[in-house]
View 1 (cartoon, helix red, strand yellow):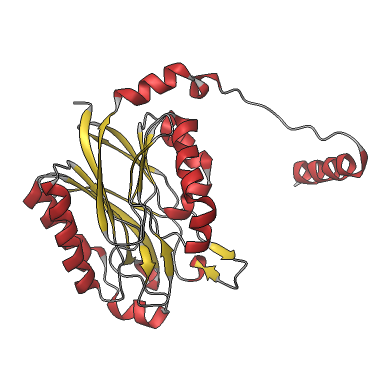
View 2: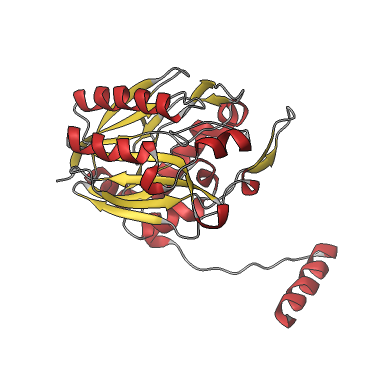
Length: 294
């Protein structure tokens, strides 16, 4: 089975997980009614909450998290593979994981993934984010075998680290994902080009559900959920910030075809770096010696 219908759900999650679960149920039902076999939700499906105390008040461990419970039930109810882009989960020692979940058609948990790359940035408009102050970073990339193909899991800021997606593609993933809560500023600048670049350079489909609009906590996210082909063509887009469901029919053999046309995965070669000329070369040489000595 290489063909399936994929859906990406665009949300505007608020600070109340129960209200977000109600929205999730409605949107997943809409996606299933459109014939989707695989349904993806955005990063922070359970709560978009930048206030630590407010987040702590609604935080639960995996077993008791309302989004995890609802997702398992909805996957079984609709007979779909349901990918929760992420939700905040309480883990050991008082830490929090930004965790994605993938559920099978009987509601069983297939796997989970903790976001590796933390969004620690200062933007031009004064917006400042320090995810590492709140979340514990993951250590392993995750891929999963589904009936229609091998899928790689990633979250939002991960999209800026092409080596992660290259590793997934080299491990056989023909479907890559980056469900997100991109800021409006960074989304306007980079969202589309990053999604298409990861698809093109890996000869893979990229599916990225997104948060969109002005949230209760004051955050503004970009929306524009996307499904992109291995050739870089946008197959479906929510070209706005409102809650929505987009769908596209996917044939994973197109990934193999794209990789045959442009076999860059196969043609990659190891290489070193030489710095030539001037002070830069001298400094690089000193740094190299220092690293070697340590």
